[in-house]
Image (tube, rainbow, N blue to C red; front, side, top):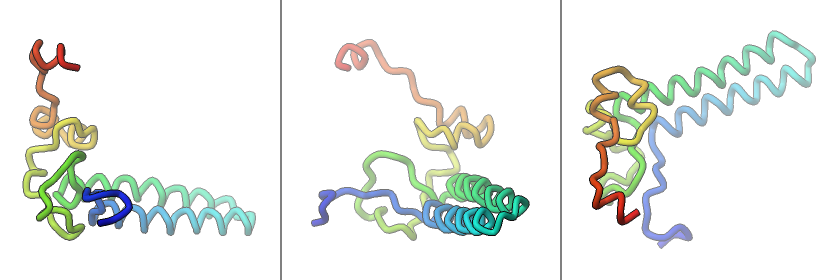
Length: 118
């Protein structure tokens, strides 16, 4: 058992890829700052922005995971999310993915009973 308990921390292909690309972009921008090379700073920042887009696209392709608890069989970072084509509920990225995903991923209205419990 880890220090975080028996939970899935959500490590995914989308997350690891985006982090690696952002790390490269940050290092390039930092090196450009040290070298006083202004175009290099902008190139590094563009790579960091591209990391966000790549992560989002991989999430939409099923290599990211929705938030919340998942079955233990899906905890490995190499497991593809087969339900991603419909969109994840409460996921801004899925709602930004287009109208079909947005409708599927829109949070369902809660009943009056459920609101009273909150």
